Image (tube, rainbow, N blue to C red; front, top):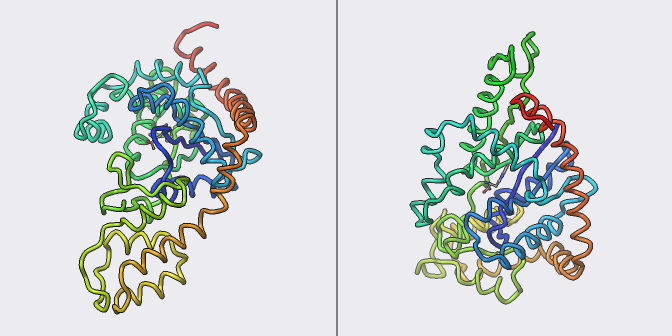
Length: 336
Ligand code: TRP
C-alpha cells in the first residue's frame, strides 16, 4: 500500500498541524510505503518572500523529522524537486472541468479571507491531484478540509482514464472485471475525524492566519506566553467551569486519556482556577514535545544532514513517478 501526503510550507508548525495531520503521518510510516512531501509550490500561493519561502521549506522538513518521521521508513522530499508533478499538473489540467474549480471550498474560503484571486490559488487542486496521482498513491491521509480535493483527484483520474485508456470502465477502475486498468489510480482519503480540528487560543480553529497558534518549536517563553494567554471567561475558582471551551478542548487533545479524566472531573466540580489548568496544559506540552524539540534544535544545527535526506528522498520519489508519467505521456501522444 502506498501512502502519500503533503504539508504546505506556509508557516511554522503548531499543535493543530500535529494533532490534525503530522501525528497520523508519523504513525502511518509503519503501515505501508509512505511518501511525505513539503508542498513548497503550493506555498507560493501565499508566501511571496523568497527568503521566507526557502526558510519555511527547510523548517517544515526539520519539523517532520523532529516529530519522528524516519527517512529509512518514509520518503521525505520537496514537491519542487519532482518535475514529473508539474508536468502531470498541466496534462491533467486539460481534462479538468472549470465548474469543479469554481465550487472548490478551499478556494472560496481563501477569497473570503481576503487572499486575492489568482491563477495559482484557482489551480491549487489540480496541482494537488497531480501530487497524488503521479505516484499511484492508494491512501492519502488529510484533514477534513481537504476531502473535496481528494474527490476531485478521483474524478479527474477517472476522466483522464476514460479519455485516454481504450476499454477503461469507470465501474472497474483496476480492470479486475475484465476491462482495461486505468493509468491513473484512484486514491482513497483517510480522515482522522476525532482530532481533525484543534481550537486555537481564542477558540477559533487553530490557524496561523488567526494568530492563535501554539507553535511546536517556539522557545519556552513564547510557548508559556501562548498557553497562559488562552482565552477564558470570569468563572470564579470555586465554580464548575464551562466545558467545550478552548482550554478544556486543548486539555482533552493534549492530555493522555487517564490524566484527562481526573482533570475533567475537577473542571466540572470546581475548586481549581484557570491558571492552574493552564499550568497542567503547559506541563503536558513539554512532556509531549520536549524530545522532538531537542531533535529540532539538533537538526537546525546540521543543515547538511537535512539536505542529504531531502536529496535522497527526491531521487526515490522520482523513481516512483517515472513509470506513471511515461504512460501518461504515451497515452496523450507526447514522444520522448
Ligand atoms: N493542500 C494540502 C493542505 O493544505 C497540502 C497538500 C498539497 C497535499 N498537496 C497534497 C495533501 C497532496 C495531500 C496530498 O493541507
